[in-house]
Image (tube, rainbow, N blue to C red; front, top):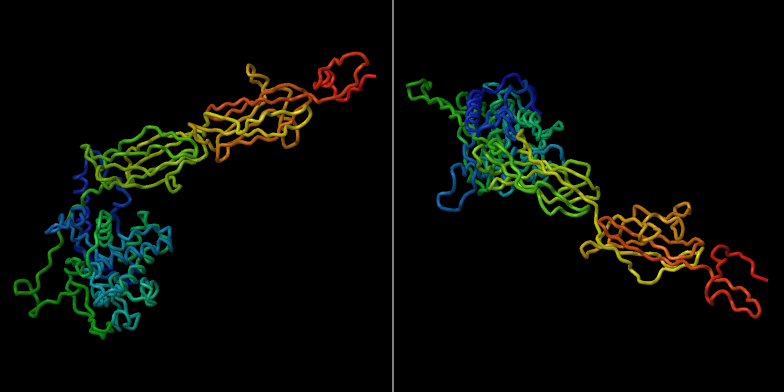
Length: 593
């Protein structure tokens, strides 16, 4: 980090009063009913003084103060003459853009809680070097000529004596900001990165500089999705409220859209924060540029007066005009007056199934006009385990050109019950759209046995065959369907029987009702083994599934066969092949003598 210094950077020509005028113009342009005090997270502007003087990545060097165009970026149409006004400003040189996106991806893995958008790197790169002087870099991402800030000798800027022996900035007396992201040597020594994998940490390489800037902004555990952390990160780069407001303006502009342009064709900014303060040149020092290159200072860093003193009226230098204030246009979030439901008012699905419909909302202005590119957050609440695609409960979707946002597909879990999907405009207090939903239990409308073999058993023994059934719903296998199996007295009296066949519980005790049964993936259900008591007869097993499927299974219990001697000369009183009446009540009766 750079050492603490006592002298602040001269204020930029973009003043706090100008920022206030822009906010006022924005408020006047909004649709009826839009609250200007409730800005979305992405639209925060600086409204307080920066922190006390202290360390910064750039040593509080000058920066470009150009503001983005009022019009939202529009990609080139391909027609002669280009597209809408402002397109050129939204063009980012291909290698520079690639470096920003790769840096964002790298810190997303290294520091997942930082939430750094690559557009923030683009905004800082814009105000620090005009995107590496319009993308003037070689194939490896190194600037064709070094980009150097002014000499930090305390004359109008901070005073930072040499910390690198001139290795990075070519100055052995004082430090200077270096490269497309304008790190001072002392900061680069602790924060430099190798972004292009060549084994070197070069502040003049856009890949190295962008990755270093990303890690620097994400320092001290910052979450850049939080307003205070975002402001603190930007101010750590240059401790100026005007700098903060300028970076925020470009951040929002780039978030609305950019497009790729060839390297070296980017537009160069014109206004700088130090152009109204001519200052003497810094000491001439030897430099160590790469072979075939010449160090250059950032445009506008120093404008010496002509010979003769440069007094007004004698042909001296003309005082630069301050940039014209540009009211910031309302963002898509700020244009929304109401959010309307354009989809179902209620969602229903069976456990484990996908919902047939999605949540759809429409963002409109006070006059009913559609608002595209509005960030809508869909969130599921309730005790069910219903989720969007990807297994998430919350997701953010932007409205399309017709002002509609559609949630991802919803899938019900195994937990039945009610839930609610809320859709709201990110960063606004507009009434959300609420859609209720219900997850119902899995159903089966038909149950059949998988075998047609009779189920018979001798009293006091176990049934050889186990009962297996298959449940279907609309002629398709019904998996995971709850079922109950009960021994009943009769068709006319479907109450639990007090005798006849039974199941056994974990302790081996007889039970005649089984609850909590579920069909398998094929809709099949195999019941536990059945046992018969000593009561012969015909009995009914009733199987009922969730959804109304019902099946009656007939069970036959026969008395045990016993052989008794017949009296001489008398016909047998018991038909051949049937049990003695006494056998049904006592299997141990003594034979007649």
